[in-house]
Length: 213
Image (cartoon, rainbow, N blue to C red; front, top):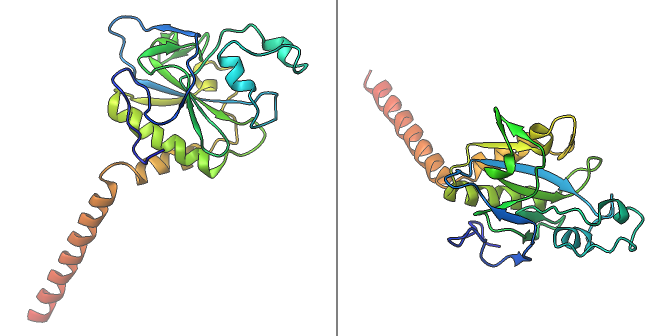
């Protein structure tokens, strides 16, 4: 996926693996998309790379395929995006639609966070660190989403559903993620070069003044 992902008018990232989920509906009229929620998921729990997550989000999970699946088969859930351990990005719901990812939730006094949020699932658990590829992809995706939508806040599932959810968990490095957004934001390199040039010019001016004195 390119450094700056491109979204269609409906909010689908061009060139990614798009697997439509039926577990979505329309957002309330006039509702701004201003919150990004980070989750984690693994199916079966603690195992990575299998088809379980995609099957869950598309209502095709076989309850006989694993003992755990019987507890979640039939659940109508989805997210807008999934980032695999190797950084591969999946999309299940267009950003303009409401994915069913946050459940009972609230943020800054507003309930029903699905109405005004975009949900991103990271393949992982609460017990192991996430990968470099996942942080890089999440940062790229976040910048693209912030360029299109008025996203003001980024929160974890545990922040919007405290006591009920714990993801993305203690191994998600929020400082690293926010640093990537700051370092790689559009124009950051140009601004850094400009600052360096200004600093060099000021230093040269001070040297010339010192010689005159």
